Image 1 (cartoon, protein in one colour):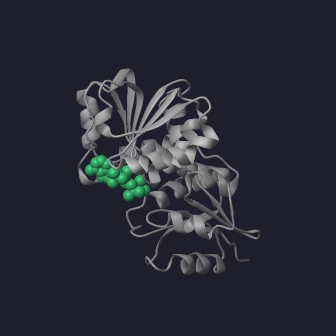
Image 2 (cartoon, rainbow, N blue to C red; image 1 turned 90 degrees about the horizontal axis):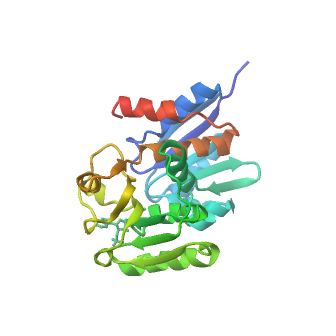
Image 3 (tube, rainbow, N blue to C red; image 1 turned 120 degrees about the horizontal axis):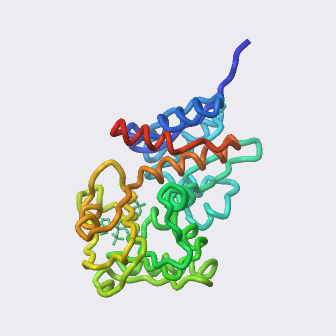
Length: 278
Ligand code: ATR
């Protein structure tokens, strides 16, 4: 008898560095789910064909990483509300009812903040830095937590304003939401500052003023695995910092739940990745 394991993969370019295969292998081992999960490199112009081929070979689901999250959104035949709000898809389900698109990035961030880091967001003042795909992914779920203020700061103010307009109608009843350039943040204080820019990857950081953090604030860096200039800045300002490793594992757990209906334990996997320096 041939036992078929369900196939999943993370598709991206590049993808070799991805920790998702390791994370999902741990989830599968822990929950006893029978599945395989592999990295799937894809040429920039070949995304749709690669998804179709994977589906035709029996693939059940894909995580989608750079630069294909928008392509995955467009390819999805039905989408969840959180994928619609993010305008991007990081989780594809290849089912009998067509290609389903979801986005688990925002849920991953909220779970890391509220469950792992024990930060309550209700009535808090949040600064979100960046107005690219990463910010679109988390803005809706952040607003769902009903902070009192959400300021979106970006070098290019137009992009921050467009992001605020996109989320305005749906969400902002209990939250004041506005766009700002970095140099207008002087004198403001926030309980949570999230770096959703890609600056840390290039060893840079947005031009933040000092004394931006309220007492007890948390500085959250979405980049993981390195002490970025933003994290060093926050440490000099004397506040607690967190990197994006927890969000990475939590968004993976949410995808696993979407596919399998089983919620894996995340704490041991976060610990494993941190201990192994992976
Ligand atoms: P992602 O999908 O990771 O969000 P993106 O859509 O390319 O990537 O967006 C990158 C974000 O990082 C943008 O908000 C960008 O700011 P601009 O729109 O002003 O370019 C921000 N960013 C990148 N490098 C930065 C730097 N050195 N300082 C400040 N912001 C930076």
